[in-house]
Length: 507
Image (cartoon, rainbow, N blue to C red; front, side, top):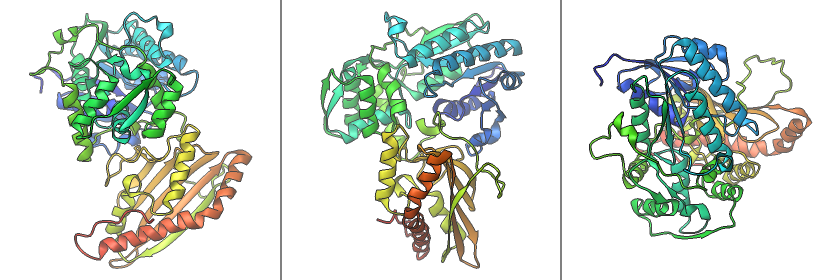
């Protein structure tokens, strides 16, 4: 821990992949941390939640930003509007201006922004909208009047990062692959732990430093080389990779979306960012944030560490930690006579010959590899259809096989509420003509017994929403009824003897 006076740090994007990992690093460095989030309750279950102050707000809302920045020394800008629609560049521009203006008005001493590494010598109009917007946000913050450090990174390798998940699934699932030509583009990846080290170190840059820094690992290689490196680290045979020039970024994103859990909306900007060579122009950040003994983490070591975390189910945050842009975020109405319109429900209850704590372990372990305990083909088809129309599908899985947090992704759901031992509420993020929730509840029902209560809710949007509900309702008995039966059976099986493992989904 530093012997210098602690700083008051504001972290935006704390519900996301980098922000959720930066917070504990700042705390470890001895700083005080305040988190700005549109839904602070999503931070409730993080292990560091009790050590920070969470405030409700948004980077596009000047009033909430101003209040959040009172007394702040360093403000971290770790958000972007990618995927919110065709106007995301304007949203990013407006948010960055508001952030800079409010930081200056509040007397913030430094802004730290994590942006994208842009290719040297390529006109900005030829860059992807994603990289172009990242570059513009950096310029806006540098011109805000507050000393700013813009850290520009290319591919970030870490357990749960979108780049790592894309690399992992492509390499593991395709021993022979026809690939886009960008697999031959040179890139300079960086380990997530080095990104975090630079972010923490940038908090104490001298006040006269107002500039961008390229940050990268020690290796410069092609994406094709990186896939072969991953195969070697994972103990897989060498992959046969055949680049072809006809796969556009859009086709590439569809290809990535077909093979990996990363949806096209995220895969496309990743693919577009790889069209041009992205290699650091220098390493002068080391003059301010010295390299650790042994230097920055190599590609092989970054891949090994990330894979180890995945295999040990010790992934702190995932690319899916952040909410999906455009996904519904309305909380479940609490008024039983909700005046917001029609609310269709499907309610199932089952007595369970197992104590509540055993039943709860089954409920909290639902989804991901454990599946949904009924008609797997129907769930798989629904997930596939969702991917076809640009949704997230089922393949996001879950961050941890046994434990859930409020706000994290669970297949094509988002965890909206958890009352440990009693209630799990999920909000649908698949493409639907309406809003949908699924509640799984556990109640005590006498000594050593419990009752399982399951409730699916749907608020239709327009005629299409009503038609959707009535078109799928004939399948509810099979899907939701089977789900209730099999969850109850799984808990009873787990009770029947010590050492028994919970069964997987019914086939």
